[in-house]
Image (tube, rainbow, N blue to C red; front, side, top):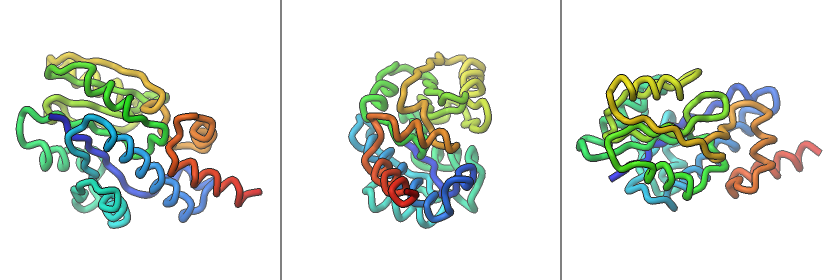
Length: 209
């Protein structure tokens, strides 16, 4: 049994040079919708959003998925640890942490992560800048989350330290997280871009002309 966990909060201050606060919220909401759609179409048993604010929680409930509140807007790793402890209390439950800003993620890519191995293990899907787009932990507490700059390498080291197999799986949809203005161009050019994100990007492009 594998649960997908999506930590999410609206902000994206690194896009403030090209998008207003309201536009950033629209974009993040659309990307979250597309990520949740991909997860719901995959083989995961349950989808849970670790919500950092009321807007995220409401958006997740509208999408028909479960919500765990991020207590006191904890840092990302603390939020993931709290949510993991809440949803994966049994040792046979795996937890797939998926970033909320992967607008080209597909259900097929999610299923590849889930079927990479059925053993106790750590499966890492790195982003193009060395971050972690998705992290499968079986069981959910086999390693702690260690997100931040260079997190893919840290997660691999934590898995080796825990003496469990570590696999790396590079895929387009888990490699492209939208953090910087250039990422918007890459997302817009992708044939796999989710429909919610594409609609927002098309509208923003139209308004800027």
